[in-house]
Length: 119
Image: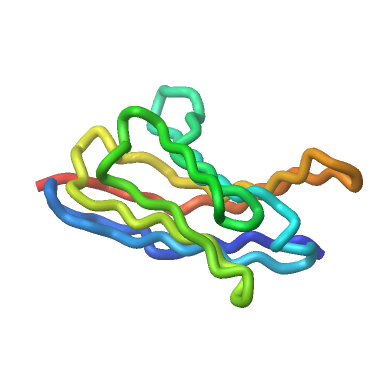
């Protein structure tokens, strides 16, 4: 069955770094665009970064541009989010998403990993 398993979250001080990973299984990973979303308490889930199926295109939310980097390794069925210069407002549950908009379509979510930025 389809699985997206995130890891790498935790508690970090402001200015610190974390690297999130999401390992996919049960579908053709290299055919899917991959994204990271986040949801803070009391707020809606928001898109953080997206990378195309080949890795040739990447886009970021304005709030993370220059600090976060999304990448993927199709040989390892894994997508990463390198987060630098973390701020308290980056605190949220971070979710991995896989989406294919051409047929056969698919949209899958991971269970989320908590990132807390606090001194």
